Image (cartoon, rainbow, N blue to C red; front, side, top):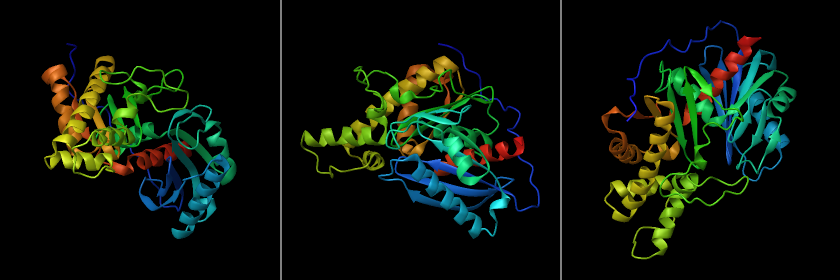
Length: 332
């Protein structure tokens, strides 16, 4: 069994220096059904937030217009003008070319392909912009002000509708040659299908332990008969029922936790990170954390990594986007 180091405090991710001006940055978290926008001052303190629906939105231009209107509304709400806005940073689900500022591919957002998101933001708002994969933004947020603060090597696992990993090695996001590092929804572990995945579809692991995958597990079990609980339970509700004593719900929880344990074990073997942070609406459920810890100890014993839930919760991605926007503004 490979050794693992204890969590060592690295040099703290440098805090940002503030000023007394009205300057600010905007942060955007684009999801498959909604987007969230935050306005923050140059120290990272959030001034205002709002959200908007992206249900049925197909064109990138429509999303950009929603973002633009949202940011202008937040500027007005906070008593600031467009001239006070220094930069904007946005996260999108899927493969994102950070250097070119392009969303290469995503199974969400109506199948975006090679969308020049950074250029569209800069044109729409007239300020410098940066883009990043949304799970990587969650990792940046946790490293800056969350559960992985001062930790140099860790993995942020976002489990919600989808499944993804933000990998931090030696203090920096590891993105891979084709920007695909962390796309663990496509990982194969015992219990997943080995059938090829069509281009743009969710991966085999995601289809089982993502929010929709867990819901589908439950519905297949319900269809087999003998369950008195409702058929249409969300993943977190299934886990709630497992904690309440439902054996059927517990079987779904245990299967999901076992496959998550395999995935974490494989990543630990590759990266030897001492900490894995679970985020996302499904990943933060305490029943999943407890069950995954049990399976992980069986696989790697006491030498294995620590598991923790996100301390930023639903704010992890926005917090990371705020940090990225401040860094983008200060780079100028």
